[in-house]
Length: 425
Ligand code: GLU
Image 1 (cartoon, rainbow, N blue to C red):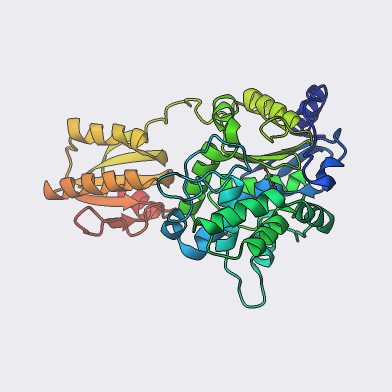
Image 2: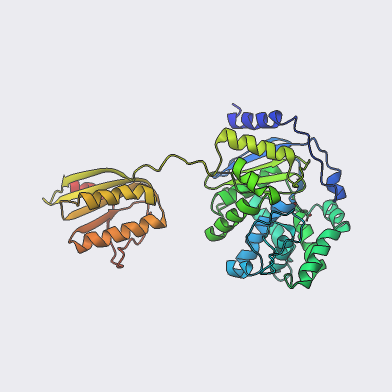
């Protein structure tokens, strides 16, 4: 049976067929010559399943969709503070190839416009024989889980007409914002932009960002969680150039476009998506690609600002039991993800109806994940209970809170689920 998800992606390609506005990027001859009727879409879930439709095997150059990944590599090489000292994170409101420098700091406004991206490229370390471009390609390969190469025809075509980017780089160099050699930085940046990918590759790359930096197929952690969150924030505010505000209100997901006609989008915790169609609108974003993303977001309810159902209470039930040795115990059976809103009901229950037994058991067998805020709140609650003379036991077979201690650092006793059922029997 053909997956209904594939049927749905086919329908997006069909529904947007009439969108023929805009034109291919004219300042790079090889892109100007692209077949404007091509269209493709792919989505990848956080378990690594890729669904693709349309011209899904067609390769095109990654262009500016390389920028977030280059930024990630620069951060992994030097640390966030070092990179933030050199490139800002403010939306510029300018076109992608403007010399947008912050008037106060003299830094490029953000890493998604060319001024910031050329500086970003110059920050990527070479390693022995490996140039920054080699490292970028290796990184793309890890993200897409297949070897990624430079399309030499696209790279040469852009290099031959790179006057504006060279101009930007020399101005950046002159103002002290680009310490590296301007020509070398632009050459490397253009080769990074000419990496050849399909929508399926891009969906996997985007899904890695959706997955907190873990490549969903290989399980490799390719970005640390903090860099990943930072990157998604910059994509949300600056990824669609001077259409960023409009994009965030309509489609509502962190995204990045490229002048070859691709757009990637990331729905944190859920999916990575990629679309392709070469004709660009006035902002340099794929016109049909934007239409495909708008449809997808609307139909699938992907908008990040959609207020979802409040998390259900983490307190499933409270049991008062007699143990085999005659002692009485209160068992709080917890469930789901422990976040502030879900754990609040447990804390409230303990505060308003303090346990009536000395022994208090937290059964976390049904808990999926414990967010730092919930762990902190639990440690503080545990400390207060211990101070009031209670004995606390945690049953946590999945290790959701390893080495759980109260807020004074006292380790909390742990039981296995078998110990709990033996004690209650
Ligand atoms: N290589 C392109 C340039 O620098 C990338 C621009 C884009 O994709 O938006 O002009």
